[in-house]
Length: 243
Image 1 (tube, one colour):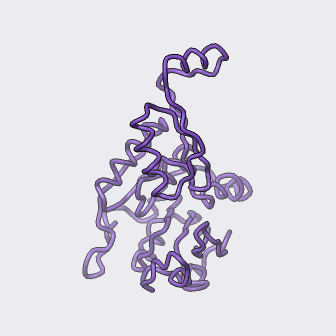
Image 2 (image 1 turned 135 degrees about the horizontal axis):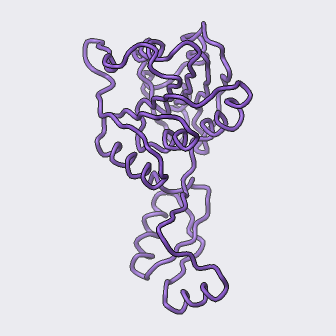
Image 3 (image 1 turned 30 degrees about the vertical axis):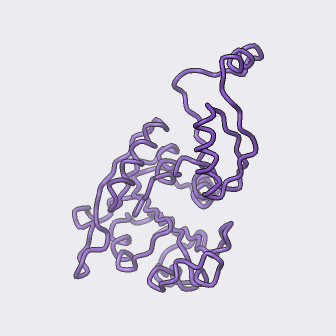
């Protein structure tokens, strides 16, 4: 799933009949629209070659896209604020699309997640994108309020990014890890998600309150602080600050 495009992209599939049937069912069940199914054959290969539309080799084209906030940071905020690529940390990185995207822009990225399966996906995606990243399996919510990143020195990172994850005890950890002038790039769910058709998350522990990040990081230079709405109707915070 982490290698697929956004669900609003209409898809064409090409393959043998059995694979097409399985793929079409899989994608349909997950909200994708399959507009066409093309059966692969030697005749089709010859036809494509004749018109110069056959590609072979190991080169792979990515269908996935980073979260729009990350693209906005790279294409708009970073250039206008003279933010140069440096050392970055992605907290609760999941399958790693956003950290891979930052690595493609020159950031030296480390992804942390508690899921070994997710980190394997990060490694595979990095190989496809031909970038080098580091991964670390870690429980980010240890008991007794311990710092789960205590082995990282103060001021270790130029950027910390967090996507769709909220654990408030990590706020002081982020401040400790970011160097003076470092960037916090944060997007996660807000109160109101529980009232949408999706209805989750609904636990207030996982939902930001209005202006919560701005208040929490009140001494920072706020570069962006707004509320965006996902395609499924859920509100999310879009927050970028220079600490």
